[in-house]
Length: 295
Ligand SMILES: Cc1cc2nc3c(=O)[nH]c(=O)nc-3n(C[C@H](O)[C@H](O)[C@H](O)COP(=O)(O)OP(=O)(O)OC[C@H]3O[C@@H](n4cnc5c(N)ncnc54)[C@H](O)[C@@H]3O)c2cc1C
Image 1 (cartoon, rainbow, N blue to C red):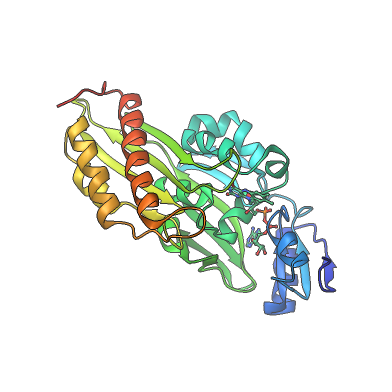
Image 2: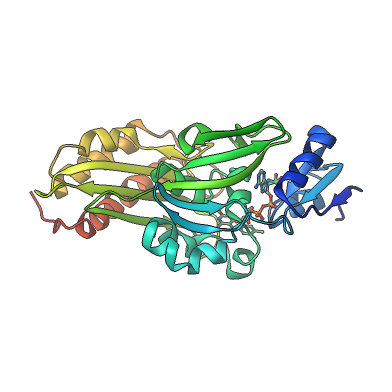
């Protein structure tokens, strides 16, 4: 199918893009990599009257390590995230997750801002940003605001982004000492959207005790979910095999209520989530410097 007719603008700066979005109101949509928006338009699931193409807007693709952490521009391509040494050093969880995002051809076009704004509950990057406690900068004609990942995703393909707003920057806080990260997902074929997935960011003290554990799940709800029971069960504790198993079981029982669909039943998703959480947490705590051992 072909999309409904639309007007097309190709601004050269963020300011110009914001002006165009403000001028055309809710009928206008930003176009980033086009990997989700264009298929939706072709199927007439989306019919924006105006497309504001961000691909030539300068300054939206920078990746820089700064004093407060890693900053990634909204138009940064998945492929750049996957290959960047700066990202690998400052946010290894992002690097670990990238090979699971779609296929190489899609990663060459898809962008971080597009993936976060699209807010597919089965997407990897929203869960990764939740685990990393990332902060998003959103700009519009009214000015700029910052939103934590935990407050950004509000439902199925829904975020706090309003018409006229652009997601311009993602800030990932600096990694604490003795921190480690792991990502895993289960999909029927590599590159497909996952049946369930888990991103974990953990840190330990000098004695190997868990000082923080942020575990985010994808594909188990209408949005990415932070497993708060897992954090509560682990923080302040030695991350033994027993403690990890208990934390994963508590999170699978209380933090999620997964949907069932033609791809997987609710019970199967819950089972996958528990298995993945256990595996990801074991991996992360080993890498955090505390050799994993049974209680
Ligand atoms: C076959 C296929 C398989 C895929 N598999 C996966 C997968 O396994 N995992 C996964 O995570 N993704 C997957 N994707 C989606 C892919 O990662 C997309 O790139 C991503 O979801 C959207 O990014 P985009 O840059 O293409 O955004 P676009 O399609 O251009 O835009 C998506 C939405 O975000 C809005 N938007 C874009 N940029 C901004 C911004 N800076 N500020 C405000 N709003 C903005 C647009 O207006 C639109 O509503 C797949 C896509 C395809 C076609």
